[in-house]
Figure 1: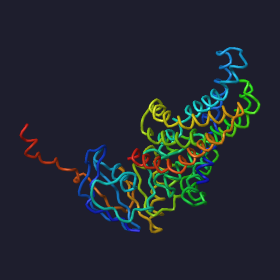
Figure 2: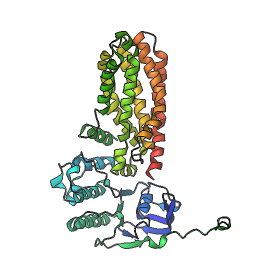
Figure 3: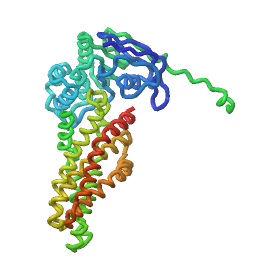
Figure 4: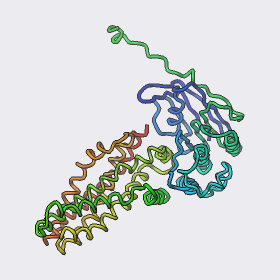
Length: 204
Length: 218
């Protein structure tokens, strides 16, 4: 499934943050989303995931294809690792969570309560959720926060396997994941200040 | 959908899940009323249906602010919104889980607490029946209020102010069924009105809740 974004403009809190953004995300392709803090990377991912409407422009091929991972992992502290993961698996209509547990080395932790996990372990569980969604396009927002080097490698391997199966990924990150991926720098898409029209200008 | 219901029930029963909060409040109110009113059996049995209904309503209100706020705080609401489940189904399941963990225990506890307030014998059946028909509306309306205030920190006050006026029709007709039942007058008209309100809220409000949730998640 190819994701096609054409001339997209988005806003956060009513303020336009990105405009004129166009790109294609083909099956098997990974895009690394870069740009300075506050440029609108998270807003872009939320817009593509369908959580907010764009100001202008078109998004094709995103409907029901996207698995989105935000800054927070959406874990319930009073459920165990397996219960958390099985819940998301049944919501997305899949059942086998073992490959996801294996990919992020969570098998030994499977009966622990998510509230007792360390920050890195929680993140691994949050990322394991992507594997049980069975969706072709992954949208990841700073996925490697609080991960150690081994876990970053686990994550990179999981992304590589996902790309190998014809999936695609859009990843907002500042570190080098060692993936064969193109970089999408949105720094240049910052909206120009709108010119002051004659009415407002009269007061200046 | 079943998975979400089971998860919410499991969360409610585990530590810090809030199951029993409404029930405990209901118990406290009905135990304290005879102390404050005084030992006048006749007066107590007159006000019993109204007090029980009011107690159940406030107990329901007490547990509303955690209905969606917890899922919003830990990010699962965002993830649920991007899942294949429509938001209308999510809010319906949330309301059902709230009713099962708050409304249903209140219905079951009401006859026991009715004894404390000297509720006349014919009133028990009608009290339970009216609560059984009325409490689902309170859960559904409460979910709507929770969806309206989901992004607000400490939105409990606003939630109560928004939801209380919407509870009034349910309270009027529900308490009327219980009162008429207790005094032996026919109860059909208020019971049908109560059932109508519940049916209408269940049919319409999930769409409104999902719509405001979509706006609040932006």
